[in-house]
Length: 346
Image (cartoon, rainbow, N blue to C red; front, side, top):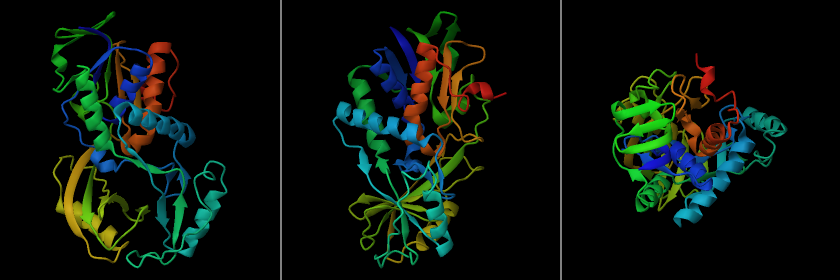
């Protein structure tokens, strides 16, 4: 079998790159063993504002424009609904934070995204005496639903190998790559945290973070917006909510921990006053990078091998942007954004 591209990994980065290939009529096959779980930690939110500091996300306008069209196209392709338009309310802890919000809303990069109307809290189950600031143009992508449906789509076209990729069987030469009975012009590695087991890219400056989230049942909470305070609370319907997320640098196992549960509950109890019950607790490893920029580009020694990784905590928004960058770099010889290029890694 001969294809233009072999892709290893089918998370948000892999799907975004597959869609670039499909839109340009390139042939490909994907290997994925379902070992990476970072999408369950992210919550699927797209939000153009860093709410801790009231600053704009890097290239927020460009990222958001590409991402919204990307998920709209996927909904049509897969005949599913995955993009839920839902506002994000940032709880104000003080009058000073309200003033900081208004100051931020005057900045050109933030003005389109920060409402200048303070929303009064009328929900007795929520602790917010100073009200909320509303972030505009936000939403949530059901990443688990997307990945499952996209895998089914690829299986129907015989384009997905649901197995681990054995790099020992990979052969690289100037004309392309071969893997068992498969040959391709290029190989793109998008394994997320799994790249640490990739012998060609295992020494990258990744600074992975483990994240844990809870799902709670809270019938009296009754909110239809994402609430952001010490933790975020995302409504899922049927009185269920996602509560997250933690950031752990040292324990990189996929095991859930009592320590993370305690931290999440402390944040949750500072936000709400109604009864709730924990119904689920999950963890995942985010492929984060020290300088908070993805790692994209060509391997130093092998001209047909490429990396698409390091999406970190904002994979929903940044995935389509970096996938477009990489495809145009490979196929059209266009330069990569210097802030994401592997060339910055010494």
